[in-house]
Image (cartoon, rainbow, N blue to C red; front, side, top):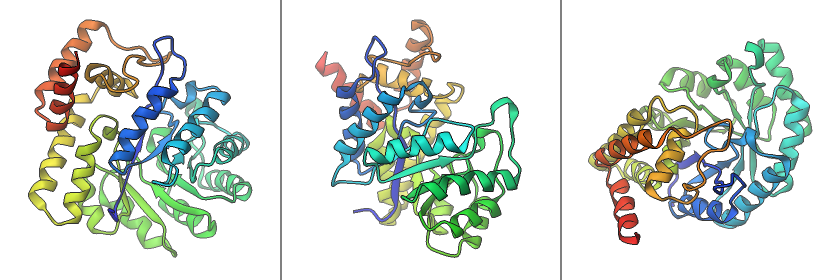
Length: 311
C-alpha cells in the first residue's frame, strides 16, 4: 500500500435526462477504488456540486460511502457557500451519510467578496466549533483570493479535528514550505500533481489530480514510481499527465472531463453535463476526440481500444 495518498475530485454522473445516475456513479467510483485513489464527492468543479439538490447530495455521499467502505477513506466536498451556517448544515449532511471527513473552503467570493484575515478566521472558527469531526482545509485561489498562509496554519494548529490541508491550485514550493514551517502538529498537506515532485521530496502527504477521472492508472503509476525511486517511470507518467493537462486547457470547469468521458465511453459519459454547463457542438467534440487520441497516452489508448472492441 502506497504511503503517499492520491486524491481526486470525482465527476458526478448524470443520466441523459440529467437525473443523478447512481449506477454509473458506482462504476465510476470503482475506477478510483481499483487504483487506490481517495475521492472528494460533490466538488463544485469536477463534481458540479452546486447543481445538486439536498436529496441528491445525500444520495451521492451515501453511494460513495458504500463503494469505499472498508477499502479507503472517502471525503466530501461541500457546494460553495458564502456563510458559515450553510457550510455547517451541509457538512452535517455529509457526515451523517458516513463520510470520513469534509473538505472546507473559505466563503465563496460572491460579488467579488474577499475576506479579511479576521473574517476568514472567524468563518472557519464558527464552522469548526460546530463540526467536531475530521475536516480538511482548502485555501483554493479559485474562490477569488489566496488566504494568508499564517491564517491557515493558525486554524490548523488550534483546531485538532483538522487532519489535512489541500493546496488546490497553489503550485510551487513557496506556500507549501511556509505552511509546513508554521504547523506545530502533524497534518497531511496535499499538493496539486503539477509541480509536485519537489513538494513530495519536502514532505507532502499526497497529490491531488482531477485527471484521475480519466487516467486513474497513470496517476497511480506516477506516485508508485516516485515511491520506489524509479525516476524514468515516474517521469513518463508525469509527462503523460501533463500532456493531458496542456491539451484540455481552455475547457473550463468539468467540461473537458465530461467530454473525455463521453468520447471514451466511461461511466457517466452518456449523461454529460448538467445546466448551466453545456457540452460544445458535436463538431467540437469530434475535434476534441481526435486531439485526445493523438496524445499517445497508453491508458487512453487502452480505454479507446476496449471501447472499439465492445462496439
